[in-house]
Amino acid sequence: MTVLLQTEDLTKRFGGLTAVRGVSFTLSFGEVVGLLGPNGSGKTTLLNMISGAHRATSGQINFEGHPIQNLRPDQISKQGIARTFQLVKVLPTMTVLENTICGLAFGSSRMWGAEAEGKAMEKLHQVGLADKAKQPAATLTYIDSKRLELARALAADPHLLLLDEWLSGLTPEELQEGIKLIKSIRDAGASILIVEHIMSAIRELCPRCIVMNAGEKIADGLTGDVLQQQDVIEAYLGAPHHA
Amino acid sequence: MSKKFGLFGGLLGLLAFAPLVFEDYGLGLMIGIVSYAILAQAWSLFSGPTRYISLATVAFYGVGAYVVAVLNEDLAYPLILLIAVGTGLVMSLAVGIATLRLAGVYFVIFSFGLAELVRQLITWYEVNVSGTLGRYIFLPFEARHIYWMLLVLAGVTFAIAWWIRNSRTGMALRVIGEDEDVASHVGINITRTKLLLFAISASLMTLVGAIQAPRWVYIEPSIVFNPTVSFLTVIMALLGGPHRLLGPICGVIPLFLLFEWLSANFPNHYSILLGGVFILIVFLLPKGVLEFVDRFRLGGAAK
Image 1 (cartoon, rainbow over the protein chains, first blue to last red):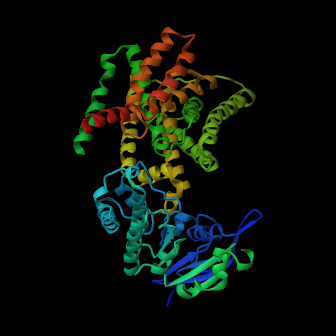
Image 2: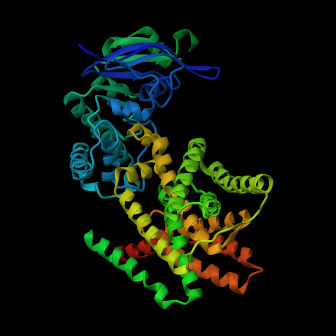
Image 3: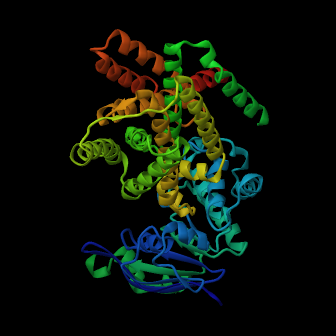
């Protein structure tokens, strides 16, 4: 399989705190990989380095064969990486349609006018928000805001989609809907890196997953196997002799 | 859309006849209103969507006037105007690169300080190097000529504002104003976009100062770098609503007339009254009068 994303010995320090320490992994074209680990294990920091929100202290990130670790987020977006945020970020005073057009107008696709509107509506249909296109984003419910973020991220047909706890905070029914939605995106051939806490979602969506603990990668493999691994269980539940 | 443009052009054409109707005082008022309309519109271009409150208006405006004062005897007037725009552009780019990373209140304070800094620098230069504090401007312009030039500039400014609003750059600015994280992650080069708009806005302000300069005949730093100009521009734009195309002008007309009346009738208490008006506007109409009217109308329609 062709490698889409590859990180090599990636490290991020904030002052004296090492949030991510020497993480190397690859993500192949068309692959959906789960990234899990307890709170504070460095998942979001890793994602932030890939999207350019944080600059890596050391190490390399290659995307489609090019190093991107020194690029700004807007440059990385133009390379074809899109993301959602852990704390959902929609643009409240702009309409749902305008929010989606944002994802199209500036990144890799640079669409504008009627063409951009058409494409944005298509994405809103895909996430089930088409009937709310004219509303200001501030009027949306929590799950609809999440859908909108997803539509914006999908708008430019990214080569790689980064989802940062997109499924968290949903009710059980919404979670099922959310999983279905991401499945449909996955089945359309997208490459996705999913940061998630919810085990059932990871099991359903990601054939492979990576586990982090205290900034380091502790496991990487088929989801079923990894979740059986002793150190993964300990990272989540604590070692038996501590209990 | 072409209908709106026709209406807009027709209105400007009609306004061009004002010098035939008004006497000196009336024309002076018109010049003031058109000047502030341009300043408030130029200010809103940048500050409306990004929500960077800039108090640097008078820094550019004053520099425009000074360029004319320094060069008026040596060069042809159109060339002087060109140099004024160039000066405003260069100055705004330099200032922008240095400061547009500042957020919120730091930018406000910096922009206010900038105007004072420019004023002090020019004062220092005039006293120590050129050995004079004031300068004379002898250009063969009457009030109506200045008025017409300002009217053309107003037309250009509104056209630029309209065009930007409907362009990709306009949307980029709005996204930046709402959330810079989202802006950069959808591919917007934040620094470049802010810088571009700041420079356009500043160049227009510089031109207002340059065109108005012949009105004064005699200028010195304390006249053309009066901070009240910056404050008035902000409050006029805020009253009308800086997010709307016609917001600034809706704030300019009533406030300019009010301030004119206040300064004529209460010259000693002018600043206090001005401050009172500022506070009232910010408290009562934080989003501008057009937003208020809209909400009222929509609220009525919903019921």
